[in-house]
Length: 195
Image (cartoon, rainbow, N blue to C red):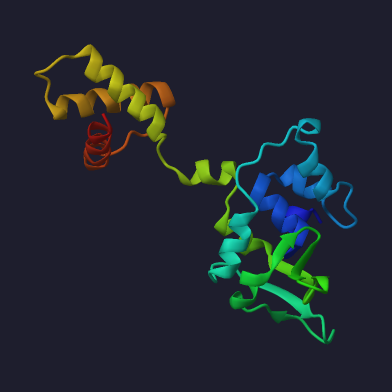
């Protein structure tokens, strides 16, 4: 089974997903990993993967209770429990471990074998392909069409006529069903304010 399809991911896999959102790269961090997190971060010119987020997003989501993680408490290795979100404020995520820095004791791992539900991770941080497939309309393309129409047709041209022209061009260029008039009006107001 591919790592992307596993029910749970470890700390390194979760970090890879948040920072890079690449199923291919995630696969390289399967068990046993063929890559090193530290090598990946230290030598970005040695790979083709582009960072899309910071690792701090994972820490923030855990600290704010948006995401749950499960682990074995270091004082007893009996069973997995949910790591309370208040714990995360004092922890440092440094794949493959999570530790607390003590003034005298150094690094201490209060939790071991930490796992994240992959479905929760994918829902919180969808891949670029997932994000685009959820978006029914390409609003960046529509905004470009709008700008061209406004430039080509000086006032007075009615909003209704502009919307009809956008819908026609968008349908031709993108081979998609154009957005409704009310959707167009909402976005046009935002674009006008931005100008």
